[in-house]
Structure formats: C-alpha cells, structure tokens
Length: 414
Image (cartoon, rainbow, N blue to C red; front, side):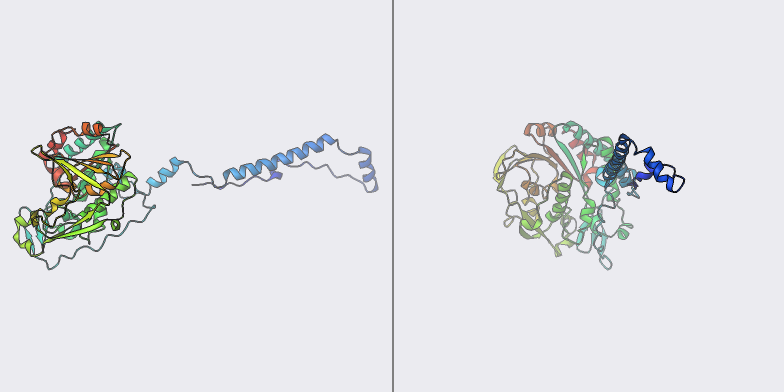
C-alpha cells in the first residue's frame, strides 16, 4: 500500500532564533545603533540555510509523488485475491489469474434435458438425439501421463517450449452438473486440474493450456458432434484461441475464415446406436487463408504430396467426413505456409482430436510438423530439434489419459 508522505515545515526543521526584545522606550533605537548591523556573513549563512531547506523539501516531495509499491508486495496482494484454490490449481501457472483483473464471464444457461429420453449404454450415454462418452479417472495412469509430459518438457528444454492441452469430452461441457450427479462418470474438470497441477509440480517449464472453461462458455454453440465423440472445428477454434493466449499471440478472428459445410455426417456413436441417425451432424470447416500445402507419410510408408490442409468433403462418404481435416490420422505430416518466410516451426503431437485444431496454426508458422504418436516410429524430441521447432504442442483428449497403452505409446517417443 502506498504511504502518505507529509513534508516537514521549514520552521519546524530549522527554527529561527529571535533576539530578545530591547527594553526601554527612546533608548532602544539608540542601543540598536550602537550595536550596529549583524555581521554580513551571518545573514548570508541564514539565507543559505533557508534555501537549502526549501530545496530539500521540494525534492523529497516530488520523489514520493506517484511512488509505486515494490513488485514483491504487489505480487503478494494479487495472490491473496485468489480464493478457494486447491493445491493443484495453485501449482498451475495457467490458473493463477487475479480475480480483480477481469470479471469471470458467465457461462450460458445449462442445457435443459428434462423430458429427453435417456439411455445408458455400455459404450456411451444417449440423451435425446445426442451421444456422450463416459470418462473414468484412473490415478495411476494419469500419473504416468503427467510424468511423461514433464519428461518431454525436460527433453525439449533449451530448444523448444512444450504446450500441453487435455481436451474434455462433450459430456461435462454440454450436460448439466446436477444431471451428471446420477451418471457413473468422473468429474473431468477436477481431473484436468489434477493433471495440470501434477505436470507443473514436476516441470514448471511446461505450459499447460486451460481450455475447459473456454469450452464451457460456449456450450450453447455447436462445438461437439451429436453422433460422434469428437469436437467440431468450432470447438477446436476456442481451444486454439486459448493456446494463442498462452503463447502471447493474436488469434485470427473466426470471421476471417471461409466456412464450408458438409451435412449428413454420422460418426462413431452412430455405430453403437442407430437411433442417432434421425438427426445427423454437419461438418463445418474453416479454411485457412494462407497458401498452404500438406505432404504426409502413410502407415505403409507411402508419401502423398500437395494435399489440401482441409479437403473438399463433397464426395466423401458421410461416415468419413471428419477425415477432411489434415488427411485424417497419418503417422507423419508436414504443412508449409508458402506466404511466410520467417523459418517459424512447430511440432504437433496428437491423436484424432488434433485434426480439427491443426489448420488454425497454419496462420502462425511457416512449417508445421504433425505426429500421430499412435503410429509414428521416430523420436519426437529429436524431430523438433532437427526441424528447428520452437514450440511443441501436445493435444490429447482426456480419455487418452486413462488408457495405459496409449500413454506407454507416447512415452516411448521422447
């Protein structure tokens, strides 16, 4: 807190001595004349002392005007404004935002599921015309995942920054919390906070990107498919915007992308419940403005060149429309933005959720190297160093963090 400063008065700092009054009437004037004027050096000394005091008061006052508190006290004040934080949240730099900086946006009204038919299947939950994937938190596997991410960040230290993004499924984003209380599924927000907190406790250099709340703020929009477990590209856009905040760059406004729509999509949930066919999805694609091409290597080690970053889905089978994004799930891909010549490069480590996300990065990097860790056979840290990538972006849907086989698969790539 800034202290009030009251400058001292000149009279109290250096009281002026007064000569004792002269006694007598007519004789007092004569006495002064006899004594004569005070020596001139005493007058000069007094004037000098008064001037010096005035100067000191002016300097001291101006020096304290608008003076700010040291940064250490400011940080303590900011930290004290964070209330109700768990240990894992406090260890996550991304969650340490002062409540006084900007008011938290209010999420839209939760979806009204009253009156909708609910069917609890083994593989998914169907509510009305939409499917939702269950999630169960497995602490041991989650710990293996956090250790892997922390280790990957250590391998990349000095050459690239590692960003980690855990993507929630539609269930916790779109369905009301009170409804989920009766569903056998784990709390995804708490799980993500646990994962991020553990990662940052082991390696604070890793940048964990919080996207759960950003998606929740748009839960009344078309950000997840109804007949498929993936997010739409609109959902991926809101995650991309959060990545840009973490990196400190400006996200390209959604209005600047050309939008294409491909109706009739029936995804992975449809195979488990044909009742979803009554209301198929529409795959919306936001095309990058950049002049960019994609080369990829297939699982059979064939190389395909000059492929579109987002393919025209007009002639695609309805079940495969999600594959229009970056040629689907390929072991290795290279995307080149021919409009840039700055040498900027990143590596994206992903599974299928990353497909809709990658096209947004084209506007920011000259080279994007995409690895699907499930099929890639090389070392990702070595790839990043070889290509001169300054950023490595790891995208995993939350269900991956409970799958020991998948965590083992990615662990062996660093």
